[in-house]
Length: 147
Image (cartoon, rainbow, N blue to C red; front, side, top):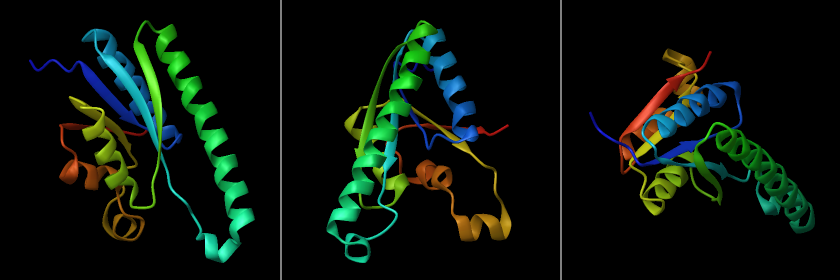
């Protein structure tokens, strides 16, 4: 059986990610590994569209909110007896590419992500960060289906 010491869990703070978080915490505890919880904060709108000041205010608010959520997840993991920390990655590219780059930077042995399980037309239009990660991540990817 493979042993994963550096487990990275990517979250978008959705209920699906909550399921993946539970799995990541359980794995980290069982394997006596470390957990790093990451979020890719990507701009939804262009600074030119919003105007510089408004864009900066929204980005700052997004960072503050994401940091608060990440810290809450880390506290939950620590209460479960897992060594954990968080990282917020701010990128301009696709979420999957930002997360894959984070996995490489963190030297992750395993990446845990939630999946909504979309298929067909919904998957084609909405895309799938999890599917893309399976293709581009530098380590094995465990996808966890949302409840």
